[in-house]
Length: 174
Length: 123
Image (tube, rainbow over all chains, first blue to last red):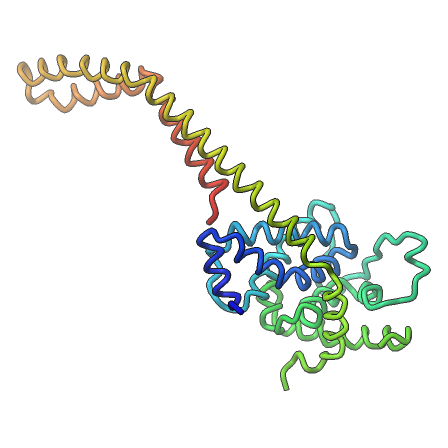
């Protein structure tokens, strides 16, 4: 099986099949990340699509390292652009409030699951937990992607993971 | 212990969720849009290139006429006042450049092509 950097090199030379393989390999992670950041599936998938289109245009700038981290950085930027268009203004800091998501009646009746437990975290915690626990980035990679200090990321992950476990235990999911 | 090991249980739960997402329809959609963008890029760059080439070709006769007109004043200047050569040539070239919209058209065509390439071509 060809490695991600090999496929990226081939894609940079215009090989669409190689890029399709990269999409196939990473779509789950990127869509999961985008859906969790956006708070719902349809906008999340749109963000993921734009992420891969941007990746195709910029594939020649991929300079090694983990492909996951590179594509997640693009996904993060696309998410920020999407959020800017939504005109939602939230400060990413320690005082960030819990962001309520618009839920339809039938969804609100569903049992609390992993995604919904995630949504009860503050946005900064959710972002850090999504990047590190769900997407698999290291704390350093998450700090690089978001531009936040490493200590801040670590602290949000620590608190977010603890809260998430509590919510899941309460809901008998974990 | 790696930092990710501290929340491996949660990572596994997230991974299970992500693995349920169907890869093929999404991949097909993305690749469809990639091909669409590629076609659009070719059409825009090629179209603007052709327009630019057409404008340039249309202006060629006028360009040669300007050059022919430039020779005589230059020859006169060389014969009569060698010290005034540079001043006269510069003023003639400036007059040709500013007085003839051909240059503006060529520059506009080139700018369009550069814009199209930089906007659509992959970095």
